Image (cartoon, rainbow, N blue to C red; front, side, top):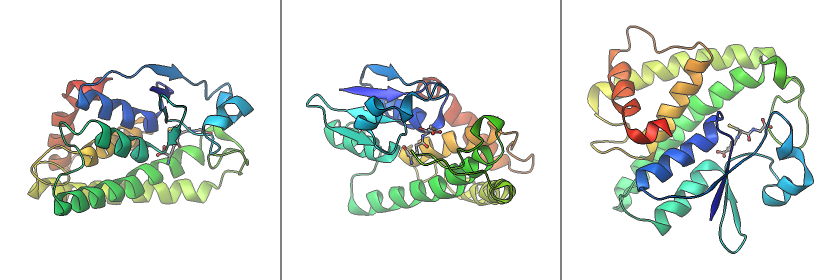
Length: 209
Ligand SMILES: N[C@@H](CCC(=O)N[C@@H](CS)C(=O)NCC(=O)O)C(=O)O
């Protein structure tokens, strides 16, 4: 098995962190996004959506989409469980994970992809180039402020995002928050609960891979 990764990019970090929490070792292949390697025919054979991460299994089967890579790894390496065990846990964790992917990751992507000079003509991922829409970046910033409000309320009532245990929802949330912070959308000073959670999760060894 191998993981196609790009070290500074947030989406593959979700899978690296998941792998580290599982305590497994999977060889990594770096993909040069800046150099456009992901848009070349060779990479498109692995993932026609032209994104990292991609998990390539030993028989050549390729799984793209960060959460799908995690889903495969959870089934192949069940311990420790990061996606819940009981049907209720699995549903609740998936709900929170999806919420922060949508409200955090997608909002952060709207900001980055519609402002970065290096992403001109790359408003969305994939083989078709889309122009940037500056209004989407403004909306993305508003969405991140709303995310922080929602998270502060949640971490006031729950130690981890999906309940009493660390799960994949915390992984997605940490990386969405770090992605926003990289774009100068810092955790607001009045969000003490988010700061508490962020400091705690950032100290896990898996947060540093
Ligand atoms: N929904 C996808 C998003 C993957 C994604 O957007 N990856 C970025 C790196 S964080 C990428 O490959 N970008 C290529 C590009 O900018 O064209 C997932 O969860 O894997």
